[in-house]
Image 1 (cartoon, one colour):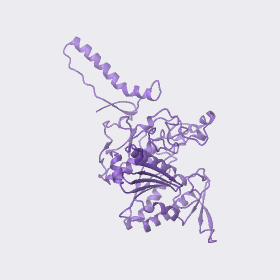
Image 2 (cartoon, helix red, strand yellow):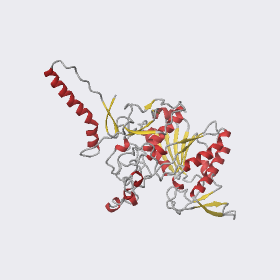
Image 3 (cartoon, one colour):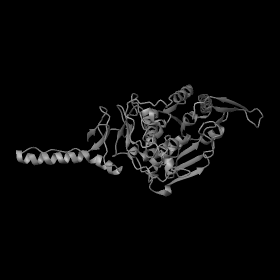
Image 4 (tube, helix red, strand yellow):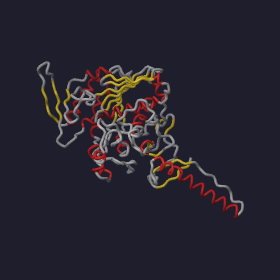
Length: 436
C-alpha cells in the first residue's frame, strides 16, 4: 500500500501503475491519462469524506514527518511481548478502512448518552481514527478470541460514568460478533448492568461505584456531583459485587476533580447506628487517598492472585477549556472535528497526579504477588478534543436552539462518542488479557 498525504492526516489509497512510453504521441495520451487517474485516485478519499461529512471542501491533513506505512497499526499479536513497546505513546492516524470497529447505529446495547451520530452529529471523522504507538503495533482486536478467553468467566468494570462509557464500548465491540440476538442479553439490576454472551457463558458487567468506597453517590441515577460524602472504612457493600470476578477494571478519577476552586468533600468515620459518626471536611485529593487505601487493603486481604486480574484505568481527560489548544473557552469542545496534533500535548487542566497516587498505593500489593495493571490512556485521550458528544446525545429534556447555541453550559466534553476513543482503551485491555 502507498500513502499519499497533504498537510495533517494520513489517508489510505491504492497504487497506480504507469505504462512505458512507446512513442511521443502515444506517451502524451498515456501520461495525460495516468495523470488524470492519479489525480482522481489521490482525491478519492477527500471527495468521499467531503460527501460523508456534508462539506463542499475538506483539507486532509497529516502531521509532517510522522508518517508510517498506511496499513501498519495492528497485528494479530502486536508487539505485546516486547518490554520496550509502550502502547501509550504514539499518534492518531486517520484510517477509514479499518475503523470504526463496529457500527454505533447497529449496536444493540449502545447507550443514548454516547450515540452521537444517532442524536444528530453529522461529521463522523471521530469514528475513523486509529491509535498508532511509536515503533510498535497494538494487537488486532478479535471479538471471538476475546469471548473465548472469557468463556465461563466474569469481567467487571467498576467505577463512574466514564468507566460505563468504556463498558458500553467493549459490549459493542463483542456483540457485533454475535448476530443471533437470542445468544446475548443485557440485564439492569440497580447499580449493576450485566451483558452476557450465552454461547460462551461469558459475562461483562458494569457496576456503579464512582468513589470506590461507600458514599452518598452510590445511586447511579440520584446523586449530587457537587456534594460528596464518602465512608472511609466501608467498602464491603461494593466489594461483594466484584468479589468473584475473574477480571476487574477500576476507574475513579472524575468524581475526585474539583468542579470549582474552593470545592471540598466530607469523609464520614464510624456510623450513625453505632452513635460514633464523625464528619471531617477535606480536600478532594485527600479523600481520593483514603478511598485508594481502603481499596488496596481489601484487595490485599481478599483477592485470589491466581484467579483474578486487576486493572486500573488512567484518568480520562475532559476538553472543557478550548483555550488549552488555542480555541475559545465559550465553545468548549463544540464543532471540533480533528485531534490535537502537537506531539506530547498535555492540557493544563489534565491532572496526572491522581494516576501517580494510584500507582503508589497499588505498588504496595506487589510483595503479596498482586499486580494491578494501569491502563495508561490519559495522553492518547488528551489529543482527542473532537471525540466528545457535546450537544449530540440524549438529554433528559431536549435542548432548545438557544441552549444548543450556548455550548459552555450544555456541551458534554467529558464523555466520549461511540465508536470512538474508548475503543482504543479496550484494545489496550484486550492486548493485556490476550498477550501479556
